Image (cartoon, rainbow, N blue to C red; front, side):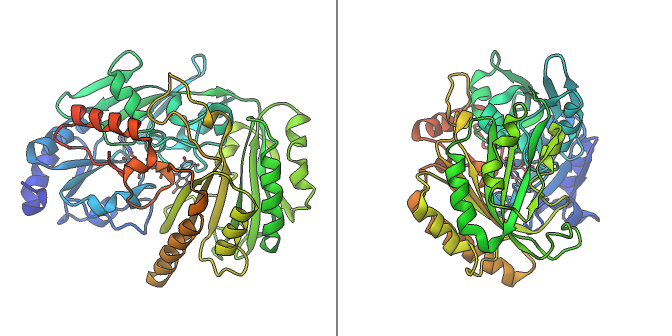
Length: 458
Ligand SMILES: Cc1cc2nc3c(=O)[nH]c(=O)nc-3n(C[C@H](O)[C@H](O)[C@H](O)COP(=O)(O)OP(=O)(O)OC[C@H]3O[C@@H](n4cnc5c(N)ncnc54)[C@H](O)[C@@H]3O)c2cc1C
């Protein structure tokens, strides 16, 4: 029985079972309730629930299972583009009203509730000289990011964020709330560390924090006409740096909008960004070879770990965006030439940003203690995104994304990174064949009725 067939009656029943709010298509506030962070995504679920307690989450899951509906957990909707097409007959379960973080500085751990965002963790942890393996943006959801892998500014030193999960609390199909860690529900613990959101609703998560002295981090910018020279220099430099350095190089066409910093507004740049841990003078010296190219703007500074959520300059509020990515290997001159021809000066590129993020270091090292995403077996992550200002822009970005990914196909690493694929894609692309088969088996065991609907569902 689909909730959409009898919206008022069914939404009313669900509402009566939850302390949190529930919206159906006929309710005032529906459009606001179904809105994702990514405003380009038109989410049309059967209902939206905003649980406020773990019991609410369990009740919503039970309700969905009873009615033959699906549950699509969502923290912020940063990753909504891959999910939206499947939402018919699903309850969108927004954890936005379940924020809350506890930092234990002695144990160097953070316990976050389902709706916590990275800024909620990074800022208080930083006061103790600790850092989580946070994303580049303060308002990305901790849980969604971490279940999908998690590439942070400390990634080459400490690996994927998913492998820093200590424990989880998960609302399951049919078994209520379960504790998941290295001793309990071991299959689920493995699957949730990189396998995505297909296995249950995470209501809380405990994560390792890392002791970091102040970092040397920031960005250098040159006019984008120098893109060829700077990308070449970046690739050569990146091959020499130790795991204490996580960095990227990108093309930036900054929108002419009031919330873009004045020196960047409406201008085009080639940008180098890095975070360096370790001691002076080593950490300053390490970016000198890039500085030698005389950046127009140099925003590197010594900063506490909390500063890391600022250096990429991600938007601080929801935006309509379209993006997509590919993992690359064997990136040499021909690959850089192809990238710049497709998206650099003279290409007519509609992208706000096209980045090459260096992988390797701890990201490439597998350990038996790791979860389903044990490593990222590629040299660089390519990610391109544009802002959708209307139908014409959407078509241009869509076409340019397809062309860019196609152009870079000769350097495809043979695997993908779930968090940076913002279009429906087969999850088999994100795992090797054996890992995918095990994930499918675990999904069949823990969710035989297929209640949970994730972006990139296993
Ligand atoms: C501006 C921006 C910056 C980004 N920066 C980075 C970065 O630096 N590094 C990086 O690796 N990625 C980055 N990403 C990608 C990001 O990690 C993914 O979009 C991720 O899915 C976001 O998680 P979310 O919870 O905010 O998104 P949501 O869209 O809310 O969730 C995405 C998916 O996560 C799962 N999920 C969420 N909450 C739960 C839950 N409680 N229980 C079970 N499953 C759940 C669901 O499957 C859901 O479909 C960035 C994205 C954007 C738009």
